[in-house]
Image (cartoon, rainbow, N blue to C red; front, top):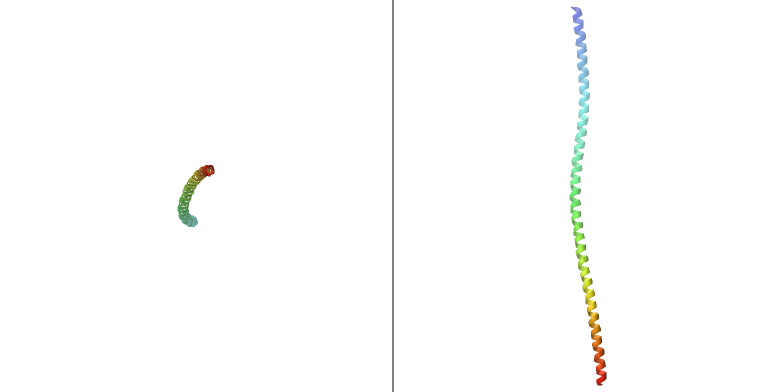
Length: 118
């Protein structure tokens, strides 16, 4: 019987030792889990900050692109209007030169007629 008692005591000691080792491994695992959860939370906060920043930049960029497009439209409209002004100025210049030439010819004819009568 004492032999059975000794065996039981040996088994008990090994069982307790195995349980202690498992508890130690579990504690180590829990430490790793806690560390990774902290890292996960930190990364999640960084992602949220970056997402917010990205949204802000996208909004700002969209507004700036819209304003740039307005500049482009205004510049194009102004250049078109300016070209029309240049064309009109050229037509006006050609017309006034023609009129001046015509008036000059009329004046020459009038002077020639005046000399004939005087």
